[in-house]
Image (tube, rainbow, N blue to C red; front, side, top):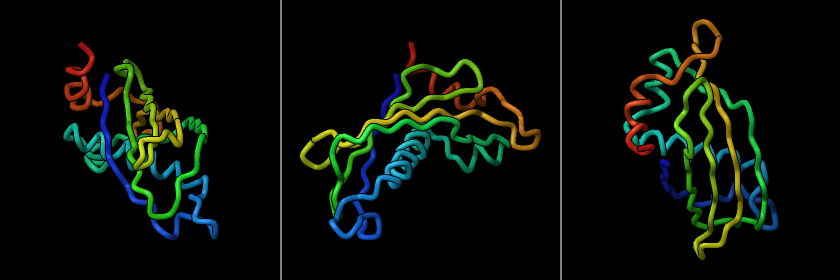
Length: 136
């Protein structure tokens, strides 16, 4: 299993007048977690796109347990629990506040797509090489 943690601070514009984070912003926090988890492996979304690979989101599930508030420092935990063997990659994600309280749980499924053909593709070899060591 691969796991990575990153942090974001809730900005004023992400909260409503009660200082509670707007529910739609959690998808963006999950995206930060996914992008930074791949970057920590030495793979950037930009490099994948330059290789002709796109990663559209095909499924997003979020369970809201507690509210994040303006100026909270959030820890986003991103896990890949299974090594992708086909065109799908699944990220399991959690968001905790500074007190370690679990705020949100999510699962995001993306497809590897050939950007030129608009068809499903296999995971790039570079990414397979980087992830494989976590699944032995």
